[in-house]
Image (cartoon, rainbow, N blue to C red; front, side):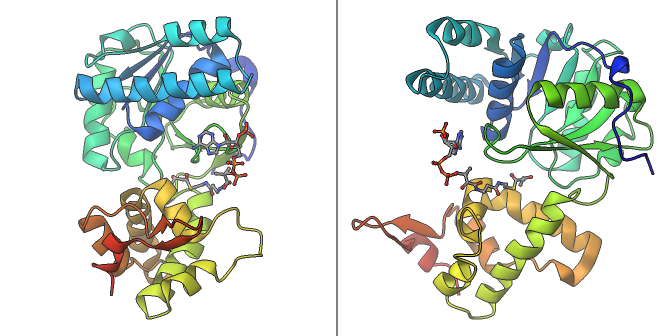
Length: 303
Ligand code: 3HC
């Protein structure tokens, strides 16, 4: 076990360029955060140009929203948009100091990504994974330089959720860890060091609640009753709304990892799987009166 604190900040490497692998919603949110807070070039990559264009479109759209709210000057908007670029090739990572992946939650996919990244980056470049629940240690096992890999786990929506979990493996060195902590602070997040254990800390606690709500639903409690059971008790959104925001497949992956690690303490929901298989993204849809009703597409598949 490591000591609870961060290593000496003086060991941190300056981050003057960032690479983001992936252009999906999480990756795009990360790229936006990096460019806003660090004011450095950020390069995103994905499998094809259309995914990259979608990611860049999201980032530009969010920058425009911040401008409309008076949070970014026109100069800052122009600078931020000019600093973010996208390419299918990872060549732009060659002079990056920090590369983070936010691709599909599959160990093999992430290992492949890191093998490709290591072929391009300098040996000093710190590598990070935004995995929700996979083992950072396993991801680092085949790396040429496993000592530079950290877990760097954000929460949705990245722009507003304050916490950042930083996970070290048995190989992570103090330079990488220190860089991660200093970077987290520059991103204005509250950083905590977690063990590299299934789903770190937050998802482990959160998924206990979310999977229990799903279990109640699976076992016959009416969806609305199960989802609203804790209303008035301080949750910012209902469990099924939160699951939709995170993405049902991502949430199911995290629960499966926790089920593998802790057994029946984390039930994998049959109904959630049916929704995912049917490509339904939300249990609820807005009605004309401004309320919410059961999504007809969900009603067709759940039992
Ligand atoms: N992107 C950017 N900004 C967003 C946003 C988004 N998706 N959603 C909300 N915001 C901003 C709004 O623009 C607003 O900013 P402003 O004050 O500058 O105008 C601010 O957040 C508050 O938004 P709203 O007033 O619209 O709504 P709420 O007050 O209800 O807050 C919420 C929205 C912050 C999303 C709140 O409902 C919340 O905290 N929900 C729980 C989120 C949560 O638990 N996240 C963790 C999920 S688990 C996870 O991500 C881990 C992963 O590994 C699975």
